[in-house]
Length: 348
Image 1: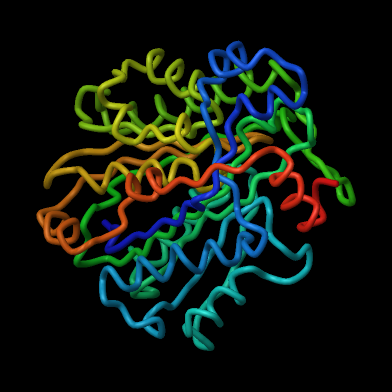
Image 2 (image 1 turned 60 degrees about the vertical axis):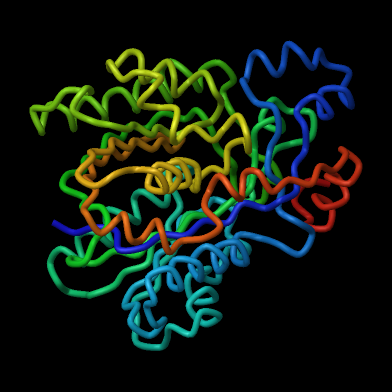
């Protein structure tokens, strides 16, 4: 088995209320909030992007476990908002952290499951002992066309996990993937904004893939949902993950500790990983955690983890937990949000 030896997250403190977006577009704010289950979303500042957030999350992970950057032998950054089309994000992050040059660097892109795909790759490298420490990062400044339904949920955040085959606070003891060619969400080269299939993104896309990957893993393990203390599913809105959990047999009590979307929106590749980090902030030793991501296009990665006694010490020495970052809020208005978006040159 391989496992997580440390993790870190970065959630920007700027927030935009869903009802402020609705008000600008003359929509029913109450209906929007009720329909999506979203009150506000986290927004990257004018001087932030997927690289800066990735660095913040990774640096927190290194500091928490007192791991020297040069001990990292692989960095994979999963995102669908890499700053460069041709220029890796992972090497920029590695250079800023002081990791290089003797390390493997790679960027992955598979919509919102780019980082969990990377987690599988690093898990394989550490389990086979090809490397000692491997760093996985999910970081996104999620993009949405002004006025589109995605604008209410598309958020920004980053999560970083350091894996090793020993000294883990949580062991990854199984994972599986489920993939099909389901075009529910896409953006062609040169297009400013992503397109999506509206309601098609629910039943045949998200719900089918999440429940299929999850059931596949449960069957492989001969396990039941009740075997797990916690469950985390990718959170594009508040309704989809709760629907998937109910179909599989997980309870809202299992979902609640890692449920972040209502407080910060959907940070795409960081969504399920920030949720996992929030669970690890409160989990006790020897508890099992179920995680399933989702990426449009489409696919899901499902993981089974079990915490170790080392998690207690890690929690005590870790400051600025996920809930602390969720509570650190400064609201901005829609005009300021548009100003930030225009400065990044991908909205206007």
